[in-house]
Length: 397
Ligand SMILES: [Fe+2]
Image (cartoon, rainbow, N blue to C red; front, side, top):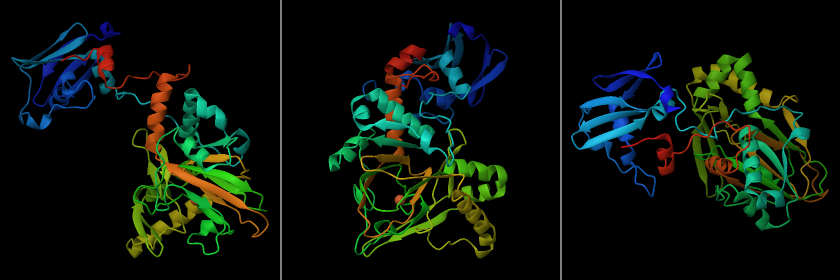
């Protein structure tokens, strides 16, 4: 409640002001305050139209004081700003806007198959609250199974569009995984596929991957999935130096065909700037380029790389199951490493159709749908910075 904030004093300093609030000092920079006056935003687009670049280098208010539950700042005779203390304290305490999509990940291990979240295709196609549930599982666990998929091209696209537009890769909008006579990629053979994340050679590796099993009556071809988040956490605990190395080195990846030469550098383990958790991995031995660090650094890098790769293959982390026709496995390609065992060529048909949606689209959809369909256990959803939110928190200008 606004009246709960007892501000004893406001002190203007050279670059910002201090509020003495309930026994602590909350500091706010003048440029930040001026930039975030309510009038900085255009009301219909919710985009900032105020230009902080036009303010003087020595921007400072003429005066500032507390009035009720608000900090009132006078920049000049004709410009005043008003900020709700409740709103200011959120930023001071690091709560900021709040973000429903920043959630603690739930690492899982090789026995996850029985507990893996399952959703019915018709259910998620017709119920936004179930799409929110599905998105939440993908944020938390990184993987979910959709069952009851029609055997059609359109079904996969429709499913993806629950989150957003299909994101093309250098394979196009969709890709079909089956044995080809002249494969340009190991996936298009009946051979085993080592654990990997898809396409780290692209500057931004694909986010959410959908693999729709259209037909699977071949012998073999078990699907393999590993929560690299769980493995990376274990690496951090047991081999912190290896973990640090894999979060720091920029590793080259490359994919070439007769008409493509796609290259990028990625970190093997990526960290979430929101909460410091492991947010993803880039791991693909078949797309790893020749490592180009100084040779002395190879002495440190290879042991870390090999240990992490060996841990990914550890049966305790490896979930193995058969993907059946009519199922679509949906997973975070930047968190979940996947592969398959070999299958017997000619024993039957194995056809998966796949595509991708960006992780950002998943998060955006989740924020919107979960706000519309909250569940009792949700943390408080701080409103976005829009007109209604500004009115609610009392930010005035
Ligand atoms: Fe793959």
